[in-house]
Length: 244
Image (cartoon, rainbow, N blue to C red; front, side, top):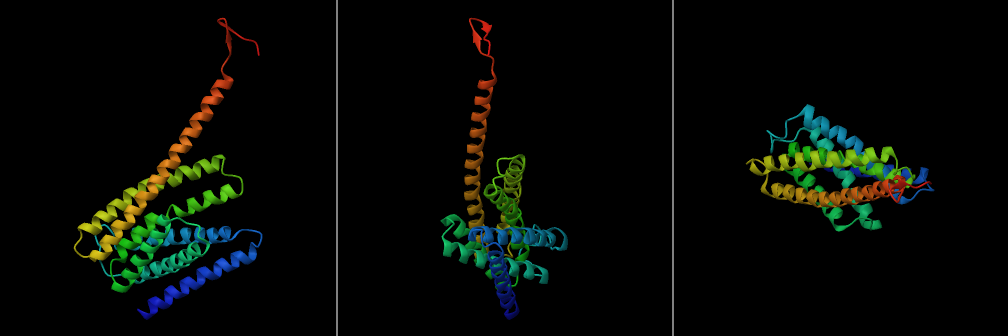
């Protein structure tokens, strides 16, 4: 347990050092720019690591819920836990996030601490990390595109589509499957089951926000298409096309 605490502390120090380096190299940029660079890097690294653990290294989360933690699972969760502690502290200090995101961070931190302390159930928690973090790089890319004035382009449309698609398929669909296995399996701790259900409810809250975003975007596109057709439509006068 001492080695796990040291590993989490080293992870926290590494993410904090990376943030300080980003601030030093990008003095003209905002603090949020530097923090989102760290978040982007964490999302890419942890998605690859947790995906490898869940899909290749094993054990399979849908059949081995509550199994003992492997060394690789401990390393991945310690790395992620250090980042979440850093990001929660940053959000509280700069007061940039709402209650839903803060609640998500605190649930994630408590869940990973519990799993590392109990020595089991890292299999399903690692899978939850994978389906949750896989959309994070796209979310940060969207923010950077906005900051650079490149969001209203074809690339911005692709990023939005991939983000919504992966969120609904993996975080909502895949997350529901993982939660079902956790709740019905006798091995995971009951407190961990309750935390997993709370995490999924938070994801549903995020889904509502995404649905509102998609609705606004589709309405805006429909209005622009309608106005464009009205401008390009031929004007008729007494049954004849009017000269332009």
